[in-house]
Image (cartoon, rainbow, N blue to C red):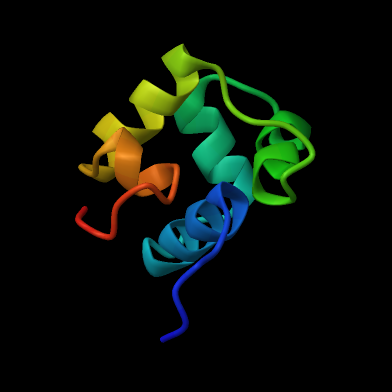
Length: 72
């Protein structure tokens, strides 16, 4: 599997591995689907608060989500 080269690509890959829609994941985060979709397309980055929430839900590090590490 090709390594994601952006936060958005990594978020999308993880979401798909979890078999969740953008809407389902956005609901878990308490944000709109449009806001979450912007993260996956790299139109915007999640706030630190949202990034930490994503990491906790997915049981991965924030460094992993930001593509600073390949270690989950």
